[in-house]
Image 1 (cartoon, rainbow, N blue to C red):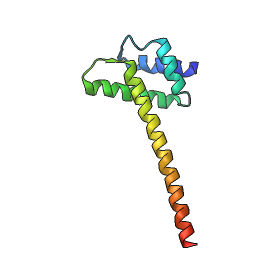
Image 2 (image 1 turned 90 degrees about the horizontal axis):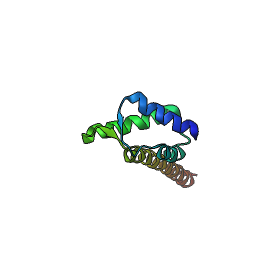
Image 3 (image 1 turned 90 degrees about the vertical axis):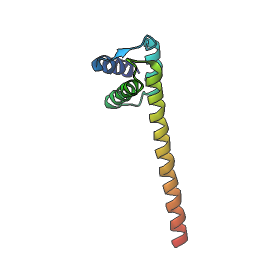
Length: 100
């Protein structure tokens, strides 16, 4: 988890974006706990998506809420893909039962 916090700090500083005051060490540790299975590239992608959201909204600072929202969206997509995969297994199982 400390590596995730360090990676997030590194990617935030590497982007050169202004970071809001609510992005504290404590908040980054909480976010690192939520993203502990993420690779360095996934963390970089998370920071990039948060920066794109800031640009889209016309702001000039990345805030903690941007990072958490992007993280939660990624987690929801992961769950959605898993449920779709499980649904595909169930459908193929039913098809196999019908044609067997």
